[in-house]
Image 1 (cartoon, rainbow, N blue to C red):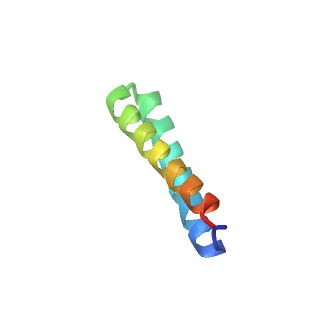
Image 2: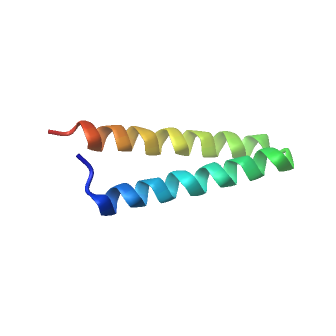
Length: 54
């Protein structure tokens, strides 16, 4: 299980990355949006790693 502090940090990072990715897409910057999508995937992997730890 993720403690509240760590979970809040991951949520904040995910939220910021999503907003930035949407901004890049709106500006037509597909390359940066793709990098941000990879970062979001990495954050989600970390989330899953932390929640499945026993």
